[in-house]
Length: 236
Length: 236
DNA sequence: TCAAAAGTGTTAACCATACACCCATGC
DNA sequence: GCATGGGTGTATGGTTAACACTTTTGA
Image (cartoon, rainbow over all chains, first blue to last red; front, side, top):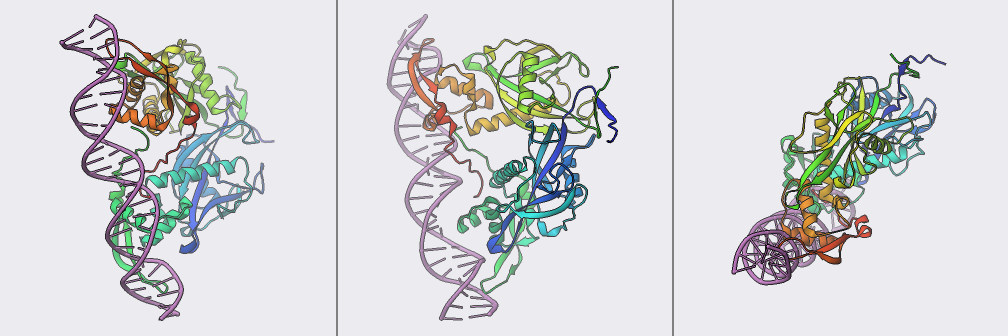
């Protein structure tokens, strides 16, 4: 039994961050949404798959903690993360009262080598349609992270991170469809993203396979920065 | 100096909840959005105004902690609260590393007597346009709570809580305008809320003042439960 | 010449917005 | 009879959504 040198006047719940990091993999014609999981090397739930994450350190900002845990457990050195919510239901962690802050992100999976360390015995991408049983309430957290991502993607195309410098509209569409889990009308999709002005034609064509070559485009971050559209939904 | 009997192997940040509770007050023709603040009776920031809130207890769920703190410090026994976000920027609390989970809610201010207790020396409603200087980073938290509420109100009319059993459409509209901080077209407003089906005509008329009496309506929760509309905004 | 993906326009339905006049009442 | 707020309808412009055929290439 270790000494327990950190003492407080009142009991304190533990605070963790958990990261729901997605990528997209596979052939263009059949992209699959994948999520990064680790195999736990520590009790509880040792040997089970779980979201990467862990305890927030003293005076560590929440997003920093998420990035650190992600790097420590999976080797992924950076990602754009967004907070989903804080969850602290009693009983969700068998170690006691633990509140977790959930982050979600999207990353190009093939640009980084996975490297499990620390509390993780393994780290790999899982197809979201073929998930193993997850530790704690991580199945629930994952679900919420995914819904958050899909909502955000409907507001703005958050997915340029996943594409090479230049890309075709079909690639952008396939990516979007993989994340949303639904197919989109090609003509409508093209018209809309071109109106939006986030992208501009780039030099060259992508020629591959026995068919007409495709125009390459690049992302125009300046246009992306300012959202011109109002997110109106209901009455007013 | 008190003893500090709660000891852990690793340092733990404190976890608080803070509640941004709004109400609407004043004449129908000039409703004002107000927020509930307490005057702190404990250091740090003793004597300063702050959002009600406090430390989460062991094995206490986050929403339960928010309700408890609200009741303890202001005497308001219940409210519909929604989580806004968790904030844990180092340095935001002079007592050390404290992560707070912010909740926002709306309540009918005149239905409950305010009663400051515990860490609060006073509790009162402040007009959101005439706020005092706030403790900690509470000005920022309040701002985020308000934006969250306004976003939600544009999705669905969250404000039936604030109205009596039966109400007129003008009352509903005045309320909505007070929260959004903008005026709305009367005909469009009426058409939309009636299409939505959340309300139904009730028996009777409201007759007051030298003008035509107004039809009373009541809230229909069953219809309210299912949102029929898709919150589409961008391309897809 | 065939298969496979790229590329392109139009239409109809719906939704948001703007706007002006009569009605019922109390004083 | 007038001041006050209650109540109503329509026209316009923009957005969404559905839909099919031609083009270019490699094999």
